[in-house]
Picture 1: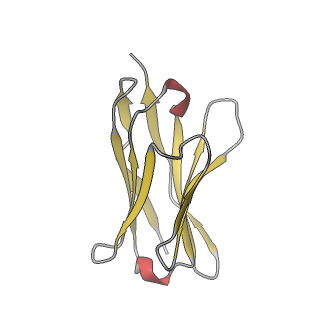
Picture 2: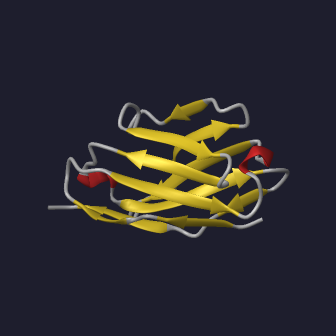
Length: 113
């Protein structure tokens, strides 16, 4: 199983960005899919998740600004990020569990003016 993250870049504070995570297997088969991030000098932290039934949950730091969704037909996990702040700057990783843990490579998001 492979997860391929993309969509990172440089964005101004208050801006938006959408990350994608393409899965080599059906996203329906994952018990859970999630996004994590790691800022420079900090530990990796959980951002949000979606379970097999489509229920989402988010960390307090992104609740109301970030939205996780899945495109079942394309086998893609998305992270829509709005109202971005400088403290959202990090490498973002997608994750999935379908009997084992799978991680995508990171994609850099930089929020700066």
